[in-house]
Every structure is written in structure tokens, then in C-alpha cells.
Length: 107
Image (cartoon, rainbow, N blue to C red; front, side):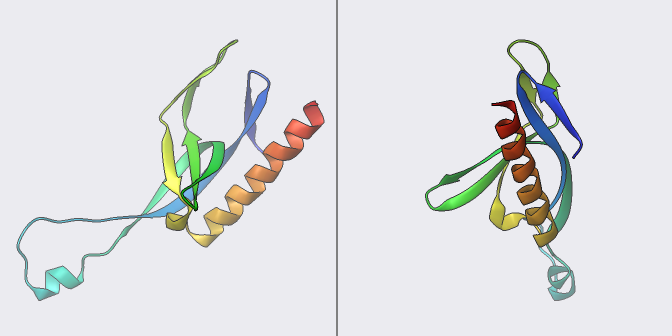
């Protein structure tokens, strides 16, 4: 799996698709209103981690970074798993497995 290594950790590259809320504050007729849909967004970057909070699962990614003894991360996002498309949930599961196997190999 394509990845980068920062410090002693490997971060897999991921491309995820997720549903974003769309909003509009203008007054429109029925036809325009019925055309309002969520946007399917694509995010490319590296998987930082996943975590659970209040019974919900979340994913954190980053796209830019500074390497070195103490790496730093930029272009960071956090997503609730619930907004990810099924294909992207599968991608994240594979990336998590890669991270786990990489961490086990390094110990």
C-alpha cells in the first residue's frame, strides 16, 4: 500500500468519497428546491487514525506534513464514518489493517 513514513510511523495514502451537506439561503420555487442534493466530495491524503467518541466512529486524515524528529501535520480533516461511502469505508479498513501490520512488524 502506498504510504509515507514520518518518525517511526507509517501513514497509508487514502482517497475517500463522502457526502457533504449542501445549503442555500435564497428563496426558490419547488423545481429549484427539489434539485438541491448533497455533494459527493473526494478527499485525498494520508490516514492518521480513527477513534470512537460518544458511541460514534471518526476518521482523521492529513495531506501536508513536515518531516523530521517531531513531524507536524497540515491540511487536517476529521470525518464521521457515517458520511463515508461504502467503498471508502472499505478503503479505510484496509488502510487500518496496513497500519496495524506495519506497527507489528516494527516491534
